[in-house]
Image: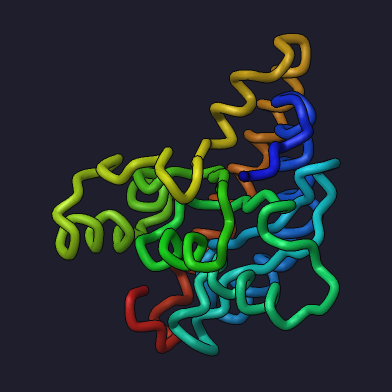
Length: 201
């Protein structure tokens, strides 16, 4: 049986935004400066929302090292971390088909995403997630099941919508600041991507 997440949506939203602000974004700034995409991920404890590990995209080393897959690689290299059923998987962007499969094979029963596939395509000029789902799996946007026998997926926006109304204003202000930083990082990546050797840029 899957272990429950012991946090209210208010606390969960705060934990997610803190993970992005304090753990994922600092790594992503470094990654983008090295020519990598803006995608990242973090693992948090279900018990208290504490971050146990964060990573960012490292496709300039290996095109398979998307933020989520690079995090899973590091998760299995670091000793003493909690098992998957005690962890929350946070992805900055809705995972691509490879990352969805990797999260499943790695034994996680959940994931949460900050940006959607449509955001990746429309706001960040990275359409590959949706194109692969359509071309390879004939799935239209939203065509995969976000609740299935393996995991339940929720958006951070949905979590904030379930938070205490008195806290939502401050949470959404933090969301706006995070979105603005990702927009700037995306502009930097797009401006320099011709110089890297990532196959799907």
